[in-house]
Amino acid sequence: MITRHFYRFDEVRAALLYAIMRGRPLETAFWVQELVDTTLYKEVWATLVEAWLWFSLATDPNWICDIRLGSDVSDLHLAAYRLCTNPKDNSLWATLLTDLHPDTLCANVPSVLPYSQPCLERYLSLALFQRKGVGAIWAARRLTGNVQRLLPDFSRIVPSVLAACGLEGAVSLSAQILFICSRTEGRPGIAVPTEIVAAVHHWSALKGRRSRRMFAVPKECLYGLTERGRCVDTIAEYRRLDDRIREEQSGFWSTALALYQQGDPDEALEAFYAAFFPDDIPDEWSAEECAKSHGLGLGSAVPSLQKIGSLWFQAESRFVWGFYEWPADRPPLQGSDFHHAAQHLNADHEDTVAALLDPVRKLLIVE
Image (cartoon, helix red, strand yellow):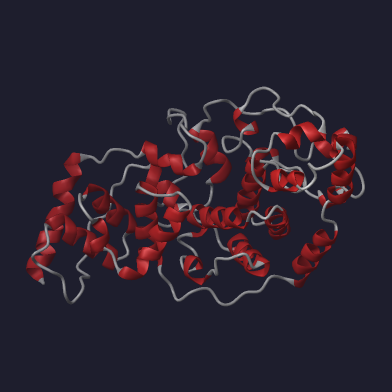
């Protein structure tokens, strides 16, 4: 899919995630506005939810409760700015990719704990109460049946929102548990700075013009997450504009072109150019201008999980201390997104089960 100003959608999405991860507010606002100009409101929200998952879940858990889903542009920019300025944390990624060795639970237990629960369910309840996220995830993965009945109602907003974004399974369950273990009073109210608001208004006034393309897609964000980042050859040959947009089967350009398919084809195309490209068309752009959104493939068909981690996940992980190592023997990443890391969950070690559950029995006896 091609966006309003001739970036590829998958690259705009990757650039938005990257700007948030790197803490670049102006770039974040730029890529949000590019998706808004292409009327991709749902896609903006889905990308912001994903950024929250991977970069801010443990540092700003209440973001998911505070956002107002919809097509209000100011809400979109506020939600994105908040994510961009949050401290970054990679706990979800770390719990998905490491062997889980949860700590032994302490004697801090709730006043009411059902003694009729199986031992593993009691372990989960105590781990949640003590905010030991790794232990809680470890237990939840081992449980069969409906784990949701063991989790507090307030946390169900997480799997609900993630399901709407196509994120389910191990990623959703792990995120829900970290959300429970990270709950805080919430971040004080923030506002988008006036200089960013002014920049957004300026960009809106340039809609359709070449000068609107103020930022290039960072090459480092393409690896593994985009078509160009997974291709070793060029996929961006500079064909005629009308050839490219006619390939669009849906989205902004498909709808726009449909308005100009009546009458003489040449006249209709000229009217289309005049309406959507008031200064010059992409076929007349310089190579330097085109390079902001087009270029050679720069990755491999099967991205390295090690390189994905080194590019995107170098922040702290409050629930998995010391998660900075990326051994070369990590398996390649099968798929095209972070959530495919769930396919690489490490198997639990059976010899830890008895040692971890035994203290739960002792705690219950003492209490």
